[in-house]
Image (cartoon, rainbow, N blue to C red; front, side):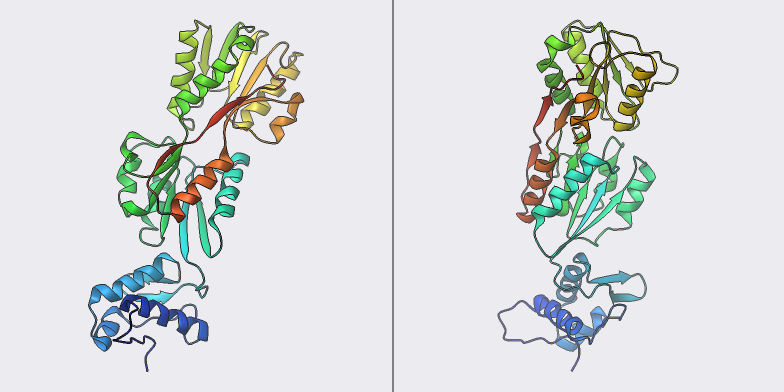
Length: 332
């Protein structure tokens, strides 16, 4: 008797019987990690099945990570953990403290028997394309964080459309996919507007904006806010060769530059809030403590992870704008 057993009169679909047979062979030890499976044609001919039926079974096992295909050689057992129901490809731009909150929330809301493999493209266009191309067909869901990379739609379209979810930042060419995203332009505008009275006590607003890593919407929202309220403002891409002046309010988008500006303030004998204001993007526990508390504009990353998990588990198509708020602390 072969590895695959088919009951012709069973109410269970034949492709499901193939899946169950291979799972049973793995559990019993008949198949071990690295073992080669019978070919599609062998199973097809032995059981008088269509090739599509066998391929459907193999694809289900492949997307769960239980088997893998090697071009020109066939299918092999890749994992003996047959309890895995979903295998999710998660592509982040980078990893930091607030992305960790997002990641942990996502995992905790998925439930049991789901494997999540996390990758990082580090804002590199070639790496983004390679990671996706190397994993086409290997997962039951693909979560993509495109960041501010260009032409991501052309790369992502190589994936099955019904398995793709866009996270954090979306683009015009990604509207056909479900998403949980931030509206950066609106969020920074409305966040600054809440603090308008405090902002007006400063002579100049300065946005530290490294364009290679930050969403265009932040820059657009900042400019729109400053122009609407007729506020003196400037956009810079780094602190290099810059002398910080009393009366400036800095909007800082990443944690490294937040530490740099605090260091510069102290070196120049100035005081946070009194001489120099700081608003940081994305809240963390550390920002509750540093300098008595740093004011932040932040989305709810725990909610983002929860909502994403719900969409995948329920196979829901939705485009969800994640809520954002200003948290005022002692830095302004």
